[in-house]
Image (cartoon, rainbow, N blue to C red; front, side, top):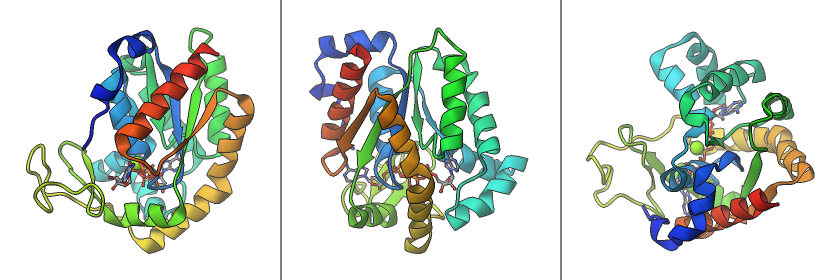
Length: 239
Ligand code: AP5
Ligand code: MG
């Protein structure tokens, strides 16, 4: 895994370290939202809130939400807004979100976006959201999804083609056996892409129209993309 810590000048990000505020990472399945969120967490010391990760935790724990979400996720469809919004609302009540947070994979429908906008509007002390949309072409996405492996302990994200662990099948950090997500098949990826085009692409347009929006090319090295996101967020926070 590469790190951006050395590529960002300490003085330059000091200002945003005081309050990055709410940041949305938008983009298709496999575009690198989780990978980038983890880089930004290291830099800004605010939490990553991945609705996919939260839902998978509910599935593993066998909660009522997890029981409903399991089959929907296995099909590559979206979990109903009311359930996801409630889950996000609970997470946003945690004290670690006070200086800001990175929403990874949320909002994913216009209903979720309107819910979030209304929630933030009701909190005048909150900074407005900054939305960053990551772009990667279809063939690259498919390769990223089918090549992805995850450490169940450290949650480090690898890719057997472009970002492999040093020892095949095992995490560099803790030696745990890597796992593959159940929905990381070509068939389910196609359905996730259909859901993205139909329901999430309008969310990207929603935030483009609102402003405080940036688009970044996700087909570059991880550290370069992260530096681009940091620069875009700093610029948008000034505006
Ligand atoms: P979720 O877990 O959010 O899946 P997703 O959106 O399909 O996105 P991914 O996690 O697959 O990809 P990513 O963009 O995080 O990429 P990553 O960094 O891992 O959602 C799963 C399911 O949960 C949904 O289908 C739905 O059912 C449900 N759900 C979740 N949120 C919901 C919501 N809000 N509403 C309703 N339902 C919801 O990277 C991918 C791979 O690429 C890795 O192998 C990585 O190593 C590699 N990679 C990353 N960056 C680079 C790079 N720059 N160069 C080369 N390789 C790279
Ligand atoms: Mg992810």
